[in-house]
Image (cartoon, rainbow, N blue to C red; front, side, top):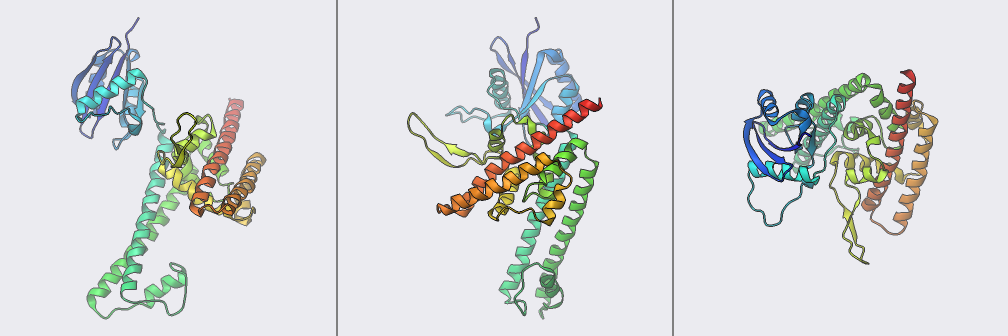
Amino acid sequence: METLRWIGLDVHAETIAVAVAERNGEVRGVGVIPNRPESVRKLMKKLGPPSTVRACYEAGPTGYGLYWQLTALGVPCEVVAPTLIPVKPGDRVKTDRRDAMKLARCYRAGDLTAVWVPDAAHEALRDLVRAREAAKKDELRARHRLSKFLLRRGCRPPQPMKSWTKPYLAWLRHGVHFDAAAQAATYQDYLHEVDHMAERLTRLDQAIDTAIAAAPPQIRAVFEALQALRGIARVAAASLVAELGQISRFPRASQLMGYSGLSPREDSSGARVRRGSITKTGNAHVRRMVTEAAWSYRHRPLVATVLRRRQTLVSAEVRAISWKAQTRLHARYRLLTGRGKCHQRVVTAVARELLGFIWAIGVSVERSQTTTLSSAA
């Protein structure tokens, strides 16, 4: 019978610290190798046949390149969540060698939690939607710089108008002038940055449309189905598809809620039950998207023209789930606000339940896609 070995890899940009946990209890450091494909291949060949090796490393900025390389070599590999690695109280010494040994020891004991590794299509889409999210934040900063500069100089539109609308932008371009050359140069730079951010967002939106059109049918089906929900349009649906991947990988809706970090904290013991604010220990991108979408459920249930147009591409089952979400979540919003709850906390509770409807739609669509592919085969 072949003896298994558990390999802990502490991965950095240039180096990888390696440790091995043997079945007999020994945990030893192997050394440090360059983070290069050839060095990794030689290491795995030295450690034994792929069937006797199990490798793991922490999720981090180096991405999933090492995971794909080890998988291609036939070595089972898992990428683990760094925040869920057990920490020994009083341990004040941290080195790459000790980190690798701790990974190997905890991996052998089964104390590590693996994260979902996206495939090539999901990872490409995720990079794109996160680039758009970064561009949106940069646009907000650029607008703040410009608006606060105008505020310091006492520049206001001649008549009340909403900020960043077409009339407001026209006033910025033709109605604001400075006599001092330094201030004029500052203003033009700020205005140019606002225009640049708008062009950047336009390019990324077009790239998202192109990426969705070229995505596999399973991704497109879930993308279209999620848009049947109120508050989730093109960009939000693309972000959820990219971040969640295969939604049916969550056995229950409550697990998806926990993955987003929207579940409440709990510190219970015996007869005492104490719950607090949300954990925020999850995917922050998913949490932000569903929280923004949840604000739309403060309005009474209604299938307006835009939403009806988005629902023409989905099944009757998905439309029924969408309508149930509107009625239930709006009632939930009114109930909690009627009790005097803070609006932000109410929206957080609504967002947590919205994830349940997202899970229901995703599972339904993925199941139908699997059935269709099986029939075609």
